[in-house]
Image 1 (cartoon, rainbow, N blue to C red):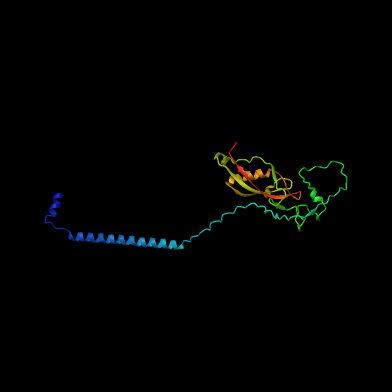
Image 2: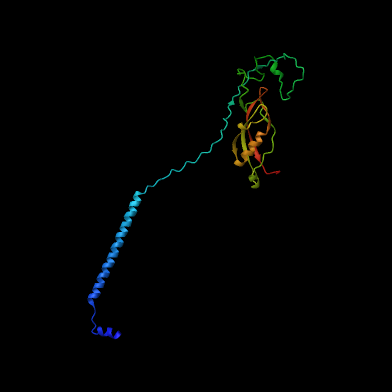
Amino acid sequence: MFDVLVESNRKGRRDVSGTIGGLFFSSVFQIAVIIGAVYATMQVAEEVQSMSMDTIVLTLDEPEPEQEEQPDEPPPPVITSLNPPPKGFQVLMAPVDIPTEIPPVDLNERFDPRDYTGVGVEGGVFSGVEGGTGPVDLSQVFAEAVVDEAPERLSCPVPQYPRMMQQANIEGQALLQFVVEPDGHVTRQTIEVMSSTHRAFEGPARDMIQRCLFRPGKVRASSVRVLVQMPVVFTLRNR
């Protein structure tokens, strides 16, 4: 077979028409493939654009954070101004009913014989002020600086040291304001934290003050409600 093929092309002639035809058909095929690829790409882009135009983006509003309900705080106590008593005297009232038993004796009561001289305005006191207003509403709250006798602490428990602060060897204090009642006790509703070195000390300080017992403050020998400020100190000594 080889001899036949060589013999058939013995003069070196080439099939020019076949070569040109092959190149033509190859070029046409490649151009058609390129045009088809470009057309397909354009169709995909149009579909993507149409899809993006039809897409609706919904934005959801972020829910507002719920506000924690704060416990109702008691209103601050109204401080009564203490008007000076008038200069005068007290009247001794004899008992109508003769007691059959010995009445209780209050050793804290003061007796000043100068208040019974009968000189001046009835209902006043010897150390009163000329032109004083006289009676004062003793059921109100008085400032500690204006009462005749300021409350005096009789007993208080040791405050519970916060475990976290004790382990960290941190000392501190909390300044509390509260009302000492006429019976010498403190109601929790009147306790207010004025300042503290750390919030961990505030709760134990409140608990301690609530269990304290005071000698009540007095105005004109009567026990009254007195607004007091007292620091509670937390120290690591003797622990």
